[in-house]
Length: 50
Image (cartoon, rainbow, N blue to C red; front, top):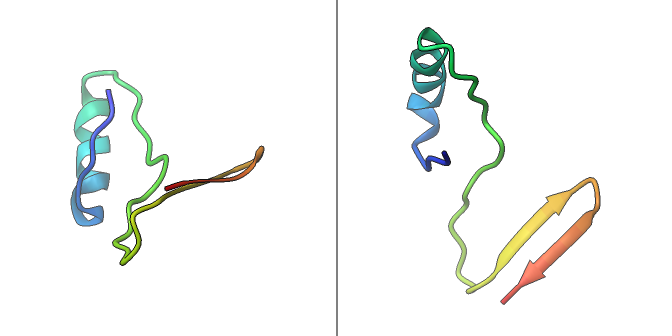
């Protein structure tokens, strides 16, 4: 499952999921932009889609 939430509640959601023995982690972030594009930065490189 993937959730997009405010950073301020991410840790609380991770704690709740762990109480049900479900692993959870923060895997990225979303930033506002004036451009219509997606940038993915990973160990495999930087990928930009527009």
